[in-house]
Structures are given as structure tokens and as C-alpha cells.
Image (tube, rainbow, N blue to C red):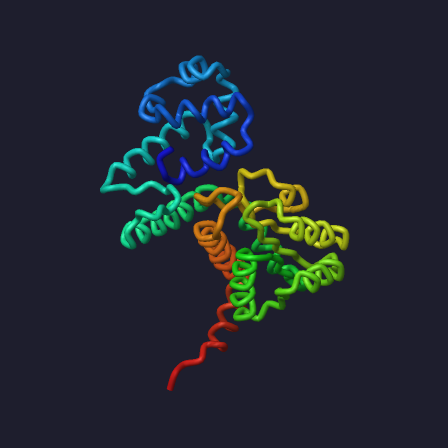
Length: 282
């Protein structure tokens, strides 16, 4: 499958797709140029599905409908035609360093582009408002996702917003169990299936706190079931992977967007605090 924002979303959707949706995905994978000019009914007949199934499939990808999907498909195919595109296949022993760098760069760029399209703006704004009105923000993550949690913590501290994040999982669990109803939990997990993060979100909810999940938008992971709001990320990596590279970049992009919108919701206070914290070199 070609690489790009739309194609990354389709790749993620394929991992847990129904037989009907998988039939659509397989056909688009092999015939992307043909789909550009096909009507919705032609695609449904060709894939042995229905027009309503095609529409639902398009909407799970963040498109308004089939026409919107076709427009994105045309954009992706056109953008991939510019220059010598390198696929996002796994790195091989025969790759020279320059090709490895190109693959990593393309993977990060495509993941960030896909995440931007997956982010639901009204949800992002609601999350930012919840941050403004929360007593304390507690951040949760393990492994590579802990790096994203740490990054958000550094930003919030700079804006003088009380927040907590702990490297030790037992301390994270204690934190979740001691949350208050006017606190906010932000839980990071690429897969959405990390047991520790699901438990943290569940305990936070039991304490009456609100929960934001930063996770795969199309993964339908159990973490989403425990969250009040989901900020979806995209990445070109499989769920079972040796390193979190593109997924980390996607999470950091969401962190930057969330913090920037948070600042706009509490602009005067945040800017005054950050200006005060600025240490000008003499």
C-alpha cells in the first residue's frame, strides 16, 4: 500500500476490519488509481459490499463521505508522484545509511500529516478547556509513551499549571487512585491496549476525574472505552514493533497542539507566566 496520510489510516483500519471493509481495503490497495474515477456503486459492486458500507468505511477514516475520500485519495496519489518516494517498509540489512534516514524521515512526516487529519478539533478544544478548569493534571504513560507524558509536563510546568507524572508504575497507580473529581488524567498509549494505562484510566474514573486518552484513533482499544475524550494519533508502525519512532512523533505532535490550544484558552495568564519564566541571557 502506498504511504501517505490517508493510506496510513487505511493501514491501521485494516488490522481490525470486518470482512466487508477488508474487501474494500484490499481492492483500494491494488487499484488506487481506478477508485479515483469509480462511483460509489461501482466500488460496492466490485468489492461485493454495499454503498452504505462504503460510506461508513469512508467516515471511519475521517472523511465526510465517498466524494471527500476520493478527493483525499487524489491528493495522496499526486503528492506521492512528486520525487522518488521511498516506501515505509521495514529497514533491511542492505539499506545504506542515506536510505535509512530517508525512510525514517518519510515515516515521521507521513505520521504527523495523518495525525493532523485525524485530530477532531472540537474534541481538542474541549480537552484544552478541561485542562484550564482542572485542579491538577495527572499524566500517565509507560515506555516510549512516558516520553510524551514528560514532554507535556515540562510545558505545563512552564505555564505554572500543577501536574504530576511518575516514572514508576506503582506511583502512577497511587496517583490514579488518589485523584479528585475536579482533576484531569491524560493517558498516553499508542496501542490503546496497555494494561497499566487502562487500569490508570479506570481508577481515575472511579475517583470522578475526567480522562483524556492519546491513542490510535482507529484502534478501538480498550483505553478508548475508559476515556471521556480521545485524541487520535496515527503512525506507520504495526502494533508489535521493535521501536516507537513514528508513533512517538505523532504523540508529540498532539502534545504540542493540545498545549498550544490550552494556552489560547488561558492566554493572558499563561503568557504572563511564561514571560516571567523566560531567563534572558546576560
